[in-house]
Length: 290
Ligand SMILES: O=C(O)CCC(=O)C(=O)O
Ligand SMILES: [Fe+2]
Image (cartoon, rainbow, N blue to C red; front, side, top):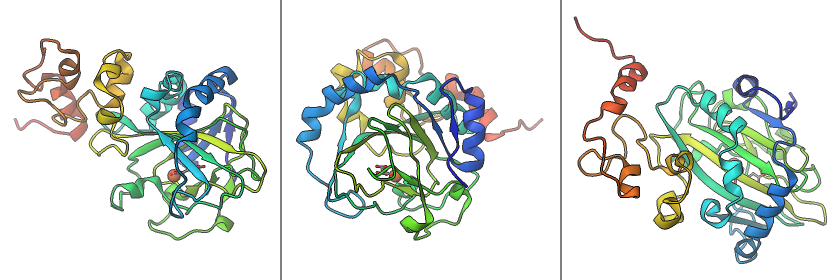
């Protein structure tokens, strides 16, 4: 099975439908080159200061630089891209809320070896989620072209339905080649890994991932994005950072206050779980006894 590509004009339903069967899909040239140019400039000082990884997962020739929301204003356009969020809405439609999980610019430099082939959801302490319950919908945006030679992400389409904890090698995978500005979407259960860079130029990807609101975020957004920056962001992004209830009662502040009201120093409108009460019944399939 090869990675399927869709045009940037695709409907979110079509994107979600391919992800449901293949576990991944590429949307070609979704981001304008000038957005990626700005991200390159905004992130460059931080990338240069980032040390290489120290193990097979992090990569001895790979720099992983996080904190994109705070460090790169332009990255917020990718994080809140309408088509991507439309697809995430559908892939994670079974939960009450989802959140930003991590933001990371990944630069694989020449000579970088293949990354351990893995499932991103192993981050949750290797808990074995049912294969029909998605906990993550993830993206990696191509900030350079992604070619087999420069270390395009290696994927195993359809592997989100495979057994857990498989030890796969590069021979089991194929490269998700794509042009700069394209984005690979994949669920947390898809086996994949960064490819080896045998070219003489860097491969740069922007990894932005989303997870169900009841699991802990991999990148701690509350400490990575200082409150003075968070307060100035659009509400959609504030809620994605975690200033919202992760489910009926997850993440409230003291007397059941909404975290966004607290961040903004507003009088809280809550004080009850009213906002979530309907969804509690709907999502949990709760039926009334009478
Ligand atoms: O760099 C890549 O292509 C993939 C990185 C990745 O899968 C990860 O860090 O979890
Ligand atoms: Fe990964």
